Length: 294
Image (cartoon, rainbow, N blue to C red; front, side):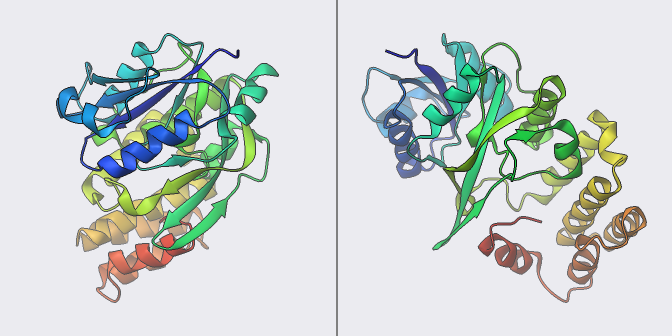
């Protein structure tokens, strides 16, 4: 039998039905798994009844810094497998996900992703990388939403999540950038994970999202070098400030976005939100229905 993959699923215990579906989907893969559910901010005893009883499933408490990065690292440390994979508690692995990725590891890949299917309300939109090899330059130019934490599979011990990420924001993008800096990320470029955006804890926490983007700019200076990538981040910062009602900051970041790339679409959108012409929530809903974020 193939050696199992360790699967780390952090949870706050506040969406038990989704958590149970995530665990069952991992167990249903055509590759053996050892699932570690990490209870973050709640006692492990409150989470255990929410997951299916199975000898391949454990529930442990977050033993490191509170929040998603510490929970992920707790899960990595709790695994004794050669390979470890992440899945968020509101996402769902689709059939064949692990087998396809393990095959890529067997050909020499150190870190593997895959395509996703974004679910928002009743709509599902496929997002693919368009390549079987994602580089650090790709992730600098674009966030590449399909390189999502719930798609990650990598050799345990090669990388850890940075627990300094503010409120856990962008810890997955940072991890992917560091991985791609070592070796290009191999991508099984077909939709093998269903990402459920409607249940995200982070979608409208604008102050945290702003802090996370500023943390990324400080941690990865190359993000400000590529004009297209820099304009995208500046536009996101403008939108975040606009959503918070910070008109001057929104205008300042929108100006920087347009200076970096005149055609950056987030700048005028942020200015429209800042001017009160359209609510931020309405913009996000329209984008999410198309499988995109701001």
